[in-house]
Length: 548
Image (cartoon, rainbow, N blue to C red; front, top):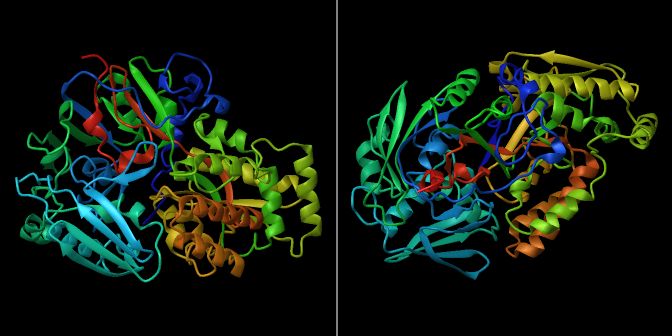
């Protein structure tokens, strides 16, 4: 399932006021300094040093309280950050964003449209009962139900059956290259059927148990106050170093204060401004890891950017380095595609090389870029005569992008007008065509849940609801569909790179920057992954003290 607008710039303004006192951007412990981070120094690492010492308890911060811990009914980063330590999946997303079997002992494809999963026979749920094929089949069918969050991941599935005591066979209408990646996400969560059915509609709410098999169990949820996880002593796998994890939630300014004063031990900062504000704070370490998240400009149906020549011209003169420094403290990286490097869960070298070949989204535009952009505008079939309306909220990061877009338009002889809406209203732009009827381009953020670029590029299909500008290409559509059916990683990477080039050539979206995962943690603690995998990987199970 694609997840939208979770890594946001909301609330950056207060936190970014502190950026002037921030240090250079390197992974590891932040050191004192008087300047904002240098984008060129930002290094992404998927992991942190291994922990060796045990901990009685840690206090961890979330951006907000989860609406539910039943991810079938309420998806969201807060719930995932908690539940991924409690509930296991059939496959597991690794810190390096690759995928491997987890509750699956072995997987086989007897042909291109069948997947046979041999399940582990040594897994027990927190109530002591063994995980069975019936539990797995129940979970898959629950995820696939039309009203559930993950139902779209099962659109190509024609049947799911128990074919042995520890075996599930999944049949597809056509080959499905991304399905096992979906099973490393919420579509692969395995529940204890008996416990879910016993809880009924209350499953996932305060006061209910977790029905899972992970390294931690849900031991308390005080609505409005905290969620507590306790090490599952009966866990079938390796035991965590930390005995208890207590989650609380805070807005940006309160989060900065709690971490700076030691009232909290760590957070995965949904808002990159939190990490920027805490650079150089004594007693804290910061790590930045691969993510699929990006900042981008999405042209809308209104038509001001309907001509691809105008979109390409705008992309050529947009000052991405300036945006990164002024809007995000140097903690985002100018980027030429609308999906971050965390999507490179395979064929990393090939994707990295292809990214460097894209030259229409320069970090710092030069005179040749401006000249090329002006030529595109002069030769455009339908250059706009009215101001291009840029939609945003008032958060500092997005406002910096909006102003940079307006400045870029001025350079190429066009006019830009910024439309600012309240943060609550901003979210409506993504799903409501009428809400964005008065803007030509949205200052947006986006991420995908799968570590495969093709998990993003279906947004450019002719019939995609996210293809607002109306890009249509039968060749593009055919390449995407072929890629989604190609099981061989190397061949699929070639197709994904071809699709990426076509998307960039048409400037369907205008990429701005990739946004890393930001882990802020007490500098005496270590162990959890620094990448976006924390949303799907039992990160707290590796959290501990640096020294035993």
